[in-house]
Image (cartoon, rainbow, N blue to C red):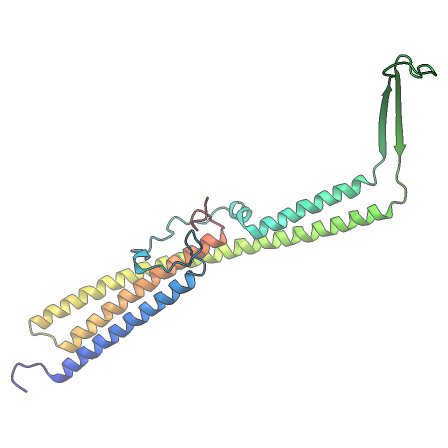
Length: 264
């Protein structure tokens, strides 16, 4: 080896690092393509054909769904379709209950009739001269109506069961949203720490490269600093991805149609 030439072990180590970083890029590209293919099952154009999104659709930072915030419990609970189904069934049960209770109530029917002969007089003369009016009524009181009582008991039992299910679902939704909110807050704090770590790691890597240029460091230390800085950047991207995923999950849990792009 000539004087001043770089040792082959340093060149081999540099090539090893490059190959490792290329492998990380290839793996990331494969993950993105797999996610885009899975998304295409639901993301389609106006003709109904599947659409494969490209890297140009990726957000530049963690601002995706940044406007998603937890609403009041009553607000997002009423927007949930599963809860709306239960509330509609409760309304139907209340209507059946009212109908069954109506069958047990007394009934009063009023009837009125008006009669008058029209046209030429027949051989028997006119039967209504000049105008007749009849008023009548009928009063009925149901006795021992077991069928109606059975329908009332059945409707009340169904309403009680549905109301219990709706209360449980409301509590379940509130708990789910609270857990997601905690996850969003934790992810945002982790992203802040990861950003600080990235800045410090890049400063150390830049300082180590400067020392190497001045002859006070070696290739191994420079590479180690750069690896640390790269790992910090990767952790920051992962933290930002967790923030976006948590916000998307929060939008789904709160049925935020605007954030999900479902608002007509």
